[in-house]
Length: 109
Image (cartoon, rainbow, N blue to C red; front, side, top):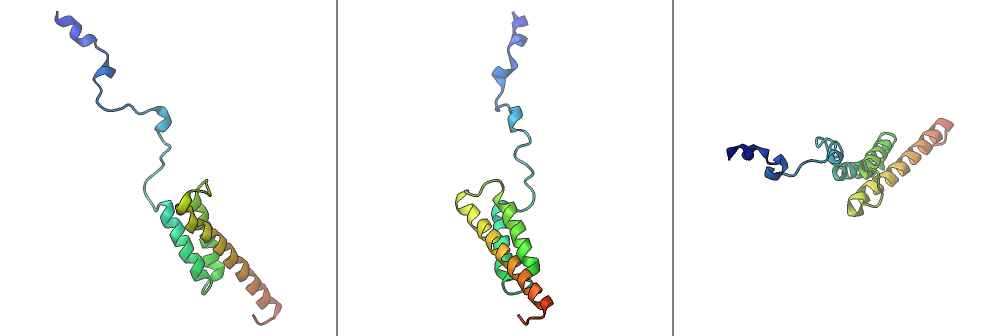
């Protein structure tokens, strides 16, 4: 009578859901700043770039904004600081290049 006790399926007694192979490795590492933080830092760099070190802070703002957007531009309110950081960083960079070109040409800008 006791011989049939070990013949049950193991899946019947599981208490936690089994992970599917699709879910492994797609979440990525959880260390480091999240996308919202990168967007805000990029926005701060873009605004500060209008006043000081625009040739450095402009590309940094573009890079951080691009990383913060990920693969989508329409993520609601989370993508707004990142999008603004990309646009303002690009404007910072273009103005800095124009300013440097003007100084090299000899015009006082």
